[in-house]
Length: 345
Ligand SMILES: Nc1nc2c(c(=O)[nH]1)N[C@H]1C(S)=C(S)[C@@H](COP(=O)(O)O)O[C@H]1N2
Ligand SMILES: [Mo]
Image 1 (cartoon, helix red, strand yellow):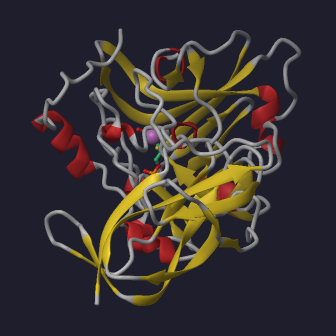
Image 2 (cartoon, rainbow, N blue to C red; image 1 turned 30 degrees about the vertical axis):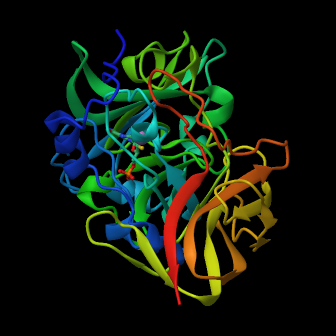
């Protein structure tokens, strides 16, 4: 039950284009913001956006059913968190796994406000293995009809920073981002942050739902935490169709953001010669552990054609690859970004 792989050289299909128009990326110039405005944050919805009314919405928890008003009375916590789709970079693979065709832009960093999940789990049954999260959206994938569901181990679900979030950047969640309540699991790829959350329950077996056991796998293993990545705000100005950049000669500050759901970022390097040589960028502190960090690099640009690139390294020595390793679902592709530019005098 694997997704189709495009024939070598096969162009983007109308099915992929339809997904791409529903699920937009974050324009890379929005890397300028510490906190991504909601309308610029990327979006990924597998099925339809459910119509949920805050007044009648109920969340089934292991030992109670709770309304939004009741949830809002519980202790309130906010976390600024980088969310990235595990499929980010998929469309650059050759051959291309057919799914949502992301390039580099399936990312955003928002401030999520809600209440911690852990106290609401109550007494954990001794035989509980997983906590299963069910969204209100429903559909078919590769012939399997399903509610959107994901699970976390009891230990991971009990982390203090795992939230039932009802606000994004200080506003009630927008319909497309999971209104009225979604799960936030700082550090994990997007698929775990279940939107339109309806039910939270214990499972005495490892959860084998479609989005866990079939989708979101890389080389037979489940996809979990976000690999290190840095992205650059494309400098200068773009050509409308190709996005090729024109930059004025002279001092140019290249900048962007970096993040990792694994070990903290310890280094960001920039290349202006398509990966032949690398130079350390200055990296700012993370405002919070899982929020993205600013980086910048001073470039004295001389007239000519260049490919700019940036790569991050974390404290465990994970470094973004320059050449793309391939996997059949196009997951966790953190290959270093390349930005072709022409410097004019
Ligand atoms: N219920 C539900 N939750 C979901 C999804 C979904 O399709 N249905 N998509 C997941 C995926 S794959 C990603 S990357 C993130 C995207 O969150 P966003 O649209 O708020 O950016 O939501 C996750 N949560
Ligand atoms: Mo995703």
